[in-house]
Image 1 (tube, one colour):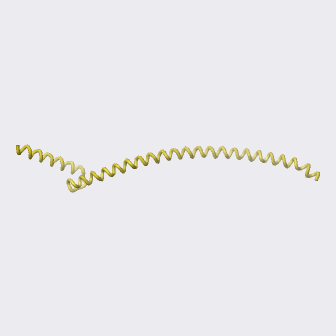
Image 2 (cartoon, one colour):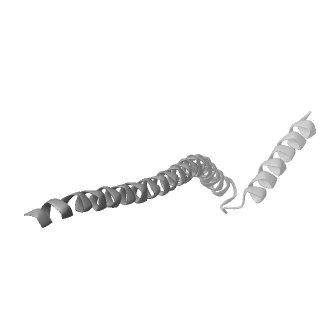
Length: 106
């Protein structure tokens, strides 16, 4: 019993020292994890911004695709081919011929 009384304070001191050591180690790990969290949060914000830009570009591109498909359909209706330049020339020539015919009749 006397030996236990002499050893008990030493065990308490060692336990306190160990708990301080582990508390210090945990605070270091906590700081590192908080820095990682801040970094990951920043990356997440950047990725969300890029996602928004990409969605905007996708919507714009989809609109352009739809307009191009409409233009090709209109060109095919005018000249039978999906060539908008040929369709424009066909309309221009048709307009000129109509104007020429009108002038000739006068």
